[in-house]
Image (tube, rainbow, N blue to C red; front, side, top):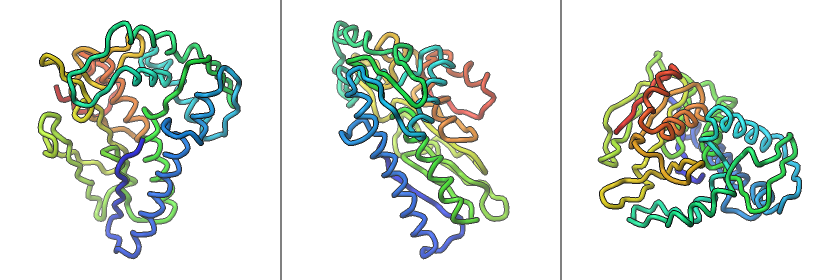
Length: 276
């Protein structure tokens, strides 16, 4: 979940903005430490190494697991926090290496939220299975950080973690924030701007994490039911919504819908941009 943390306070001087920036960085670090699957001292590690034993979780973790369960249900299994085990065979490092189909198939029995027993605050994970909250953790961190900062200032605030951002309100004189949308085929350049006065914006895609084999670009967003990237998915999907965690799940689900991404987003009545 680690991403650059940026905070912009409208019309605030350096002295006023610095403590807010430090508060944001501390909250981002707290959430990273608590929910990263790369650490061996947090609740995710305890769950993933429980070997089938029931684990009691705290209220914040329970909230995220409830949301993960809702996403699994609404996506008909396409969004699944147990699919992180596929990282054992997939390396989205820009190379041309594809895993062998038999190695992917060997992991599929270890995927499936429906195999998890979740009755808040207790979770039981079958042996060999894992959860990975990276698909919602960064967006959750953005929303949480914005709430903390808004409790400290009346100025408009923009929180940006690696391109996923949330704005508390318009700038002075009701001017919207202008956010550049990165071109999926020309990194570092913007294909255009989106005006956002309040709410969140996220982008999901294959610009930075992919496999390129025989002219085919494989996105890092995997179908948990097959273990393979979704065919005909957009290269990037940008979604605007009320919260970052909502925008993030919609942009990810749009990628998982493949060629039906635009149809899916039209049905959600949100602003979006698909790059194909």
